[in-house]
Image (cartoon, rainbow, N blue to C red):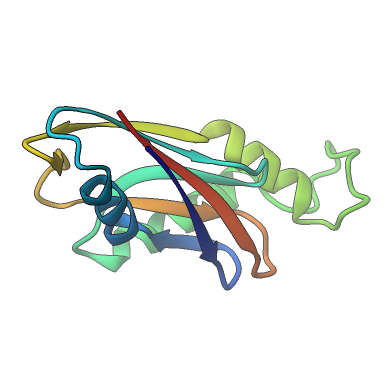
Length: 134
């Protein structure tokens, strides 16, 4: 079973989508299997990350801003704005798909783990995320 999630972002940052993914797993009714989560964009990504302390997400965002800065003279793809090419690089350094086991009908995440869509563009957007359970 495949579910399409539409995730609204408010600009750069991590948006937790764990609840929506858990709902898709429950709706699939699969007892044992694999949940594949895929973002259909090239300037956003997916990560499994700590969901207890928001400082973790803030620190990750700060690290990536330093690692892949806007305005780097290396970038030639600038037609869509100064944040576009860095967003593509940040997405390439992370993941566009995740695989999480389904055990006992539940997503097998660890205690402090959450599933996040990571928006790499400055402007908010509506992102499409496919959740396939099988």
